[in-house]
Image 1 (cartoon, rainbow, N blue to C red):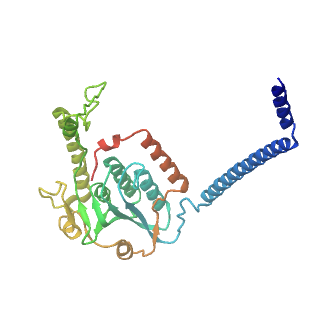
Image 2: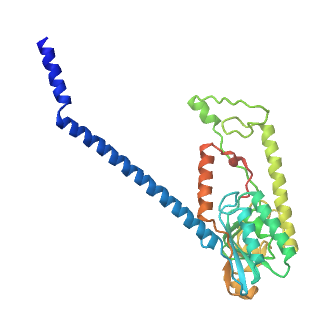
Image 3: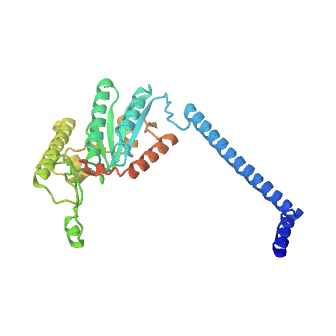
Length: 326
């Protein structure tokens, strides 16, 4: 009993100790300071973020970050078509059409050069661009449009080029590849070896068409081949309409083969050799070149990255099944 009383007294004295009270106050004060520091850091962060947003908005309004094509003197308009052609990609119909509109709307434009360096891509995007070039040429017959090929103008890139009045190439440029493909992989034999069973449930007998983990269905394969042949014929029609009597057809011209620039001129796939500077100076007769190529703003690039990340997270890989002009 005496020991319990002693322990109670010791505990009471410890609790009431001035040192204990001081330490408690210090802890409370320190916690308060840390909370204030954290609040200040967040306040600074949000203020900085707001400032950057307002600055970006101001730059866009002023045209520093966005497009700024205001040349009024006589010039040659340049539009770069560089990279794979695909919706939301390096080259897409919206961006090229925007560039064309800017070039045609500018009173100083005396001619337009499409500088192409593309292996191809989406037949839909290439077709939309081709149609728009033809439409604009009818509206503005006084403004010629020339395609100038750099390293490569194949498949979808050539689909766009044939809409121009003339096609200029370098002697070593790669031109052609008039064909369509749909590629993928098959893993059925590998799955058998490792003992993996594919379980695919569908509503619709063809919903799992071209599934890489299932055996090839001859009926579905024939259907896909028919579709590719139809798109190929559309491509051939566009080339014939664009090149006309200049095209020297043979059994290989639409087979998917490609040729260097020198040979492409002989085959009528191109008209002459010449760089963008040469065409501007010697053909359009306006040596000054103004670049009207659409450039993504910071906001656009951020939105695309965000969209791509979301698409990747959602597993949106169906684009692999799309026909491609490559």
